Structure formats: structure tokens, C-alpha cells
Length: 191
Ligand code: NI
Image: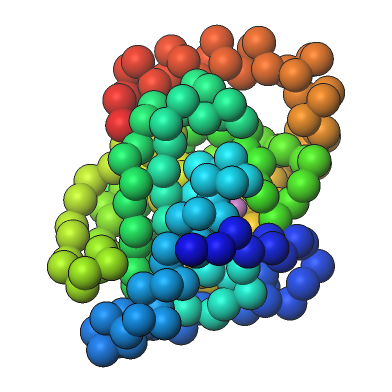
């Protein structure tokens, strides 16, 4: 396994739609190695997720894992999940304002609305189909990664640009209020 460089905003690969992966392709040693490298790269960078675009590959694959993440200590844990050809659909109209960051947008966070409850369909790395309901910040993480595979960054969904903040200023001026609000939200809706 290898830790790969993460592509940053401005690179066209982050703006391209990733392509569906066939069953044969998914089973290939090349794609299985790609998935291993994505997991290692996500963990080395301290990310909650990583889409293939972010390491310069346009296959429709993302990895997600949250385990007491120091970048996002308020996020409920998510066991390692590999999502291939994900389809993420809102279940109802309820949204929540989440302050997000992204490994491909170093240094910046911003606030955007995410659906609170989503239906998520995907293949795992072994090609087995999954059809799940995800809620809360976990639903937000799935939406963030699925967006990457459509060439969308969290920046595009920030409707109030005055919410942009560096991580340093987030810690100084915004973290306490956000964590208080989002912790109540997590306790209410679960994941
Ligand atoms: Ni991201």
C-alpha cells in the first residue's frame, strides 16, 4: 500500500465526473490496490473520507472512515466503508447546516446545508450491493464524497461566503458554537 499525493482545488480532475466501475474492473488487482492506497492515504491525512478524484483517478470509488477523528472530533464513528458507484438520494426535505472541510481544500472550512436523511446504494469492494439509510453527520459525509465523484466540492454548496474560515480562525471564533449546536443535532438524529 502507498500513501498518494492529494490533488488540491484548481486541478481539473476534481471537477470531472468519475466513471462507473464494472464488476470485472472492481475485482481486478489494479482497482483493489487503488482502494488500499485510498484507505492508506485517507488515514495518513486524517480525513473522514476520500474520493478517487482526490488522488487523480476518475473511477467512481470513495472510502469513508471516522474513528475519533482529530479534524472532526464531534463526528460519530463510521467503520471503514468502501463505496463503489454510490447513489445518494434525500429521503425527505429536512436539512442541517454543517461546517465542512476537505483534504483537497487545505486550510479552509465553510458552512453548507446537507440532507439529514439519505438513502445510499453502492457496491462494496467485493462487489456486494448495499442499500442503507444514513442520517445526521454520517449522511453528510456520504453526500460530501458522492459530490466529489460528480466533480462538486463543498465550496460550491456554501451559500453564505462569510462563513468561510481558516481552521485556525474556526478554532478561535466558531468551533465552540458549532460543536454545541451539532452535538445536540447528533444526539437528536443519530447516524
Ligand atoms: Ni472532500
